[in-house]
Length: 217
Ligand code: AMP
Image (cartoon, rainbow, N blue to C red; front, side, top):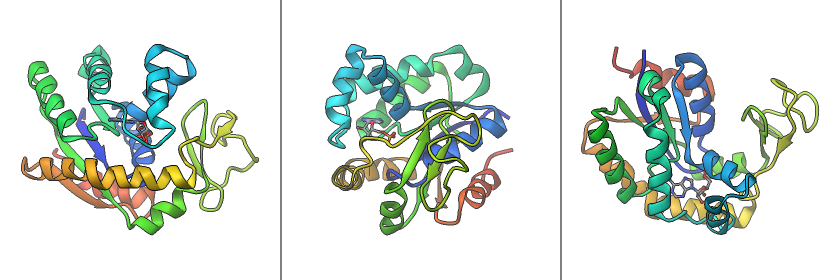
């Protein structure tokens, strides 16, 4: 089945983990705005240099460049063929409106907008200790899911890294930005009837099950 999905929720709620499961098991194309920005930063492009100024402080990259970057990815042939899971976009109501226009122009509908919900104290615990694989993107945690060999990915042997914006001060700023700017996006989709709220505190497989069981067949 090819679905068109949005994952929405505060940082550390498990969007990346669910996006990996959905792409692995359903063959959807993952479009993570945060990952795309991090790649641009690593490649030292103009967009990367601009994005870095905001990301390192836990602030949002301006709407104009973010929308343009995601519109380009959404128009890829792969996205048309296999469906997609958007992770981290849209993060503002302006971005949600722009996405509506892009999808309308492409004659695409959205199957589900999935809001992953977890208490804030769990999020703080999860983000302090989070590590990711530089090669395959697998996510680890120093206490909840440590890798078998320190600093190396169990799946592909790639080196693990800690995101520079997973520092205590930046985490609090990212949570504030979520409450003030991104939470209204959930209300925006609640009125369209495509919103699905799932409990993200039950572990990756149980969260995934809630998503799959609600999917149109
Ligand atoms: P993420 O990996 O989704 O947590 O994103 C990391 C950072 O990238 C965020 O804290 C923002 O600074 C930036 N970012 C990611 N997606 C967006 C977006 N849709 N709009 C603006 N900034 C974004």
